[in-house]
Amino acid sequence: MDFEFSEEQEMLRTSVRAFLDDKSPISAVRAGYDADSFDDRSVWDGLADLGVLDLDMVDAAVVLEELGRAVSPAPYASSVVGARSLLPDLAGIGTVAIYEPGARYEWVRPQTRATRDGEAWRLDGTKVHVPDATAADVFVVTACNEDGELRVFRTEAAAVEASPSIDGSRKQGLVVLDGCPAHLVPSPDPHAAVARMLDRLGVAYVVDGVGAAQRALELAVEYAKERVQFDKPIGAFQAVQHLCADMLRTVELGRAAAYYACWALDDASPEEAHRAATLARAFAAEAFPQVGGTAIQVFGGIGFTWEHDIHLYFKRLLTLSVALGSAGDHLEELAAIAIE
Image 1 (cartoon, rainbow, N blue to C red):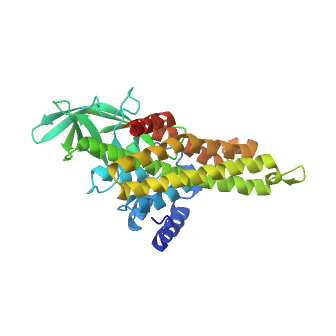
Image 2 (cartoon, rainbow, N blue to C red):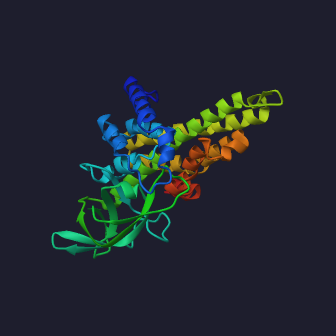
């Protein structure tokens, strides 16, 4: 097993970083931070032109890490990793509508109901925490049929409301399905298909977090070298060095867990892929927000201001616990896997 990036992957990283620096700089992220939707289709079209909409998980991780580094609002994870896992022929921007009010991260028995309507179906229910809902053209929705069996549907007719979030770079919404026309997505095992998609999407968010955490670390180290207090750079003080060392350790552990999970999702057994994905999520959900908070400590008062970019990374990392679920949830799942 080779954990070094190939020459092609390094070229991919260089191309994506240059593209995002040009088309989605921090100034552009700030300009759309309070908007309800990601509306810059030129970024999406540019990613398509780079040929990154149809990659395996390891290669997609290179893209995802750069998107996190740029705190880009582009709906790559929700569409490419999420929706396309269930709709391989998807054209345009898609997303997955899985979770429901009051059910936390339970998804196996959704309250959303699917009723046959001739050759098509109609959906009734509400989905919450839908990533990039306001930008999506297609929604992949879970619902139970008349027999109470989990099924997957696609629809273009859902009603969407933007949901508030402390992280303006990660848009989400509420999806209301009121007799919404839909088409069944054929699958021999819908439960297994959705579970695998959620593992892939969860790991995608972890890799995004690796990129954001790495950049937060870099900004903190740069500041520690430049900020002078008591006639010396604050990076000369052991307390600040310890903060930066702790961040580095967390980033590297998270990167190792994330890329191993990506490899497992591509090449390992379903059981090992799920274990690796759960482990990566358990670590990142708690550890990566701490990286953001530690970076704010290094910056001190200026880190709390709107004018400095570090708070954008802190918020991106802070909302990982919402996107991934809590570390406790995943540790319980790991315990259940170990006991089996």
